[in-house]
Image (cartoon, rainbow, N blue to C red):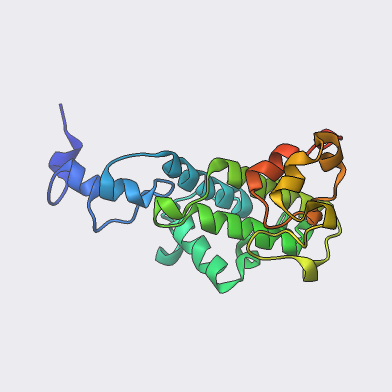
Length: 199
């Protein structure tokens, strides 16, 4: 029987695969390599990588590309932090994505790919952000009203505080425009949304 690690230059198979001198293997949570423990936030990281793969239509690791482009997560985050994510969007969809929708999508990816798990959102919040991205894509949103932190404009007078949201019947809250909600718990708002048409 031939063992692969016998043909490696130095060290064990474990040090070769998980050594600290190597970048994380694409979609794997960088915290996993430090703590050797997967968490729910590890799934959030991996999902953020998948979102980036979908946007760019390329695999997370492509060794045929120049070194700085091999790892999609690292390369994509460089473009996101520059505010130029549109430069790496798949050419087949680039012209059809609204800038405000892409901006929020990029912010969602950036939050998912945070180095520390505690800085990553819950999957519920990721879902909320993706619903909002879809809303921005489908609606004619006024970009000047958007808040880059949570992507939602001013509160309507009837939703000035959480008590008002909790006392509003689900049907009534479901008919309110999405951009009428801000500074409100994302999970409470999401539970109040009712989308009448199917996807």
